[in-house]
Structures are given as structure tokens and as C-alpha cells.
Image (spheres, rainbow, N blue to C red):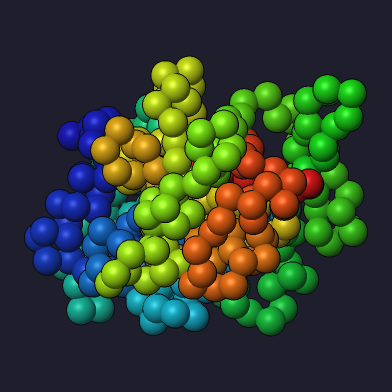
Length: 325
């Protein structure tokens, strides 16, 4: 049978319900934010992820950092990069039980291990259970993403953000970190799609006292909890800008941080950090020079020099937040 709808349900939820917990994945491309989503939704899963196009096309720095963090914090996660030649474009999802590969289920098709492969693009999977599954995985030459020598084999790419003057659009360029920031050919793109999100209210004279940046300023709450308000008019004017409610995405900041975020709450009115609601509050208190745990005052934001944050959409999984002055 060909599967072309609800691919996550087919390739992950159904095997998980059937009692499978171990999976080997060989995918040409992958994203750390989709790995985060899978680990959050299938908490007992054990994943070995091998990225087949890593050596040829490189790995985004924010994905690499997240892979390393996840491996260090969760013994059930293993992420590897194929460093052999030729590159491997295969997409294989192989579930098995207790080390017995005879008790297994395998899906193959076009779906990369990413939101693009399982949500945003038209993709296809089929169930294909054959005895020589190990031959498929034996074709790769993997290195752990945490290996101290990984940078000798893999090019890591980062976003270089250029703010333009004279009202010209800013641009983003993927740069090769091995070559001191040399742009990767053909990767400059105009940052034409963005939204501005307010930090203050009432024409920038007031702030939400128990919401927004002060969400945690009430009894029984961690005081740094925060979110950024996403006004209704933002969704009306840019209905496809943010992912669906509670779908995780990566936010890269102009000062080099990265966060896992969601749009949440009724009306998708809030931009939050999904792993911990205090991450965003700590971040903004540090930038605004407000003591951790303290209330953010309107004057703190005004003195900083900006009362909004500008969020750019790089792709459906990655956003860039500019709060520079």
C-alpha cells in the first residue's frame, strides 16, 4: 500500500502503538526540530538517526548544536553523519524489537526526517519488509555528531544577517564556518517575509502586568516565565507565516542564541519557548538588563531602544528574531 497522508501516523504512531520502541533512520536530510517533536511525542522511543547527505551538503550549525545537546541529555538518542562517498539520499525508517531484526517493520519512500518530509510537502512512503535491511545501513560510513573530529569531515553552515540601510531589505546568507564566514554559493536570500511583534501596549506606554514578558509575575509561577504576544492582525495579514499551533520550530537570534518555540494559547496569540516557558523570559531579561525573576517595566524596554521584535521566516522550520539596536 502507498501511504501519502498522515505519514507521521503511519511511520511513527502506528508502530509505537504496536509496541515498537527502537528505530533506525537513514535520511538524506533531517532537522533537529523534527527530532525534538518526535522525542516529545513518543517518549520511550530509542532513535539512531543517520543523515546521509551531511558530508556533501553540510549541516546547519543550529541543528548540529541541538543534536549534540540532545545526545548529551538523552541516552536514547544517537545522531550520526555519513562521511563516505557517494552521498546517501535514501529515506528508510526501520523499527525493530529487542535487537531481533526479524521482528521489525520498515518504511521507505521520499520523506526526509523533517517537517518538510512529514507535514509541508507531498511525500510518499511504502511498507517494505525484506531480510537484507542491514545491507541498506551497511552502505553508510557514519560519525557521531559528538565526535571530537567531526569538523574535519562536515561543513557547518550558519546564518549571516545583514541589516540594510536606506530602507533596503535585509538579507540572510548561509556561510561556511570552516572558511571564516565565506558565503555558500547561491544562498543569499532577501528577508522579505517578516512580522513585528510588540513588547509593550497602549502606544508603548504600558506593559502587561501578568502576561507577555511578565507572565510569571504572579503567585505560584516561576517569575521568569514569558511569551511574546502575536496580535490577531498578524495572523490576519500573514496567515501562513507561523506553523500550526503547538508545532515546534527553531528561532535563531541576532546575538547567536537559539530556542525551540511554538505559537500557542487560544487564537495562537503567544510565541513561547516550548521546552521551558522561562527560557524566553530569561533571554529578554538579560538583553534588557533586568535582574532575573524581576518584573519587566515599560521603561526597561524603552531605554533599550526597541519596543518590538522583528521575526523573519527563513523556512517552515527556522525563524530569525532580530532585537538589535
